[in-house]
Length: 289
Image (cartoon, rainbow, N blue to C red; front, side, top):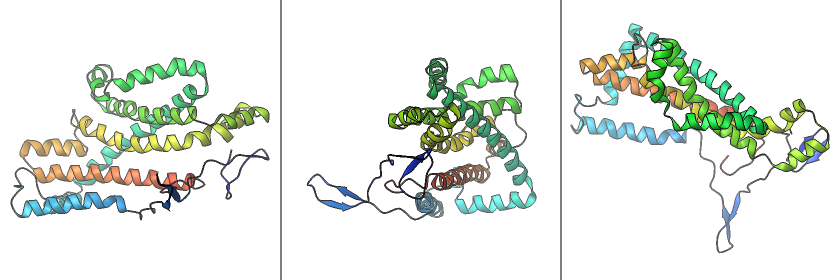
């Protein structure tokens, strides 16, 4: 099952039913039709954070937020520029990025493999799904004490914790998409006599993509939220270490710099995944896309 320019999906030369398309007209309870909401312009999701920053700056200028409690965004930006010029911020940012994205890649790969094993075979689901659900019920950060005992307090422990945090949303959403594939496509694949490889390529993988991208969007933010805590455990470099040291000296401007970096990296990562998703799933014509 491959996406084409038209609304028809072709499987080995045989036309299959096109996926459901949500029309731009929706029907109200009274039976009247109205236009569906138009697609928001790109970058519109930044409006909320921008409003918060403006209100934050105004509250600081009128004295509602003393700098001892929370530095204004303008002071944080000035401090961040100074740290960047000194070269300290770049080194800490690189160390954080290596930790976060190492755990992200490992977690995405592991979550995807487990989802395929569990979602495509009954024996795989019996062996894998229960373990992942148990992991889902246990907060990842609660595993830190055991991870320290087993792996020490170095980089291996931090990457492992991020990996465990990331794999859960990838697994849950990809597994749900696999289980939600239309049985008509499965029956068609059997009728055409597709082998396991062709079935995965033409039916399973395309059907799992929407859920995979949803899980990936959650994963790219999860890796950074996990890193916030992990970088405050016996680290000598990283954005979290910079914030922890600033806490000891009461440097709220440096702490705000760290928060802005985490938030910015999370937004950029999510935007990249959304762009990849729009490009990959461009054949879908769903409401608001």
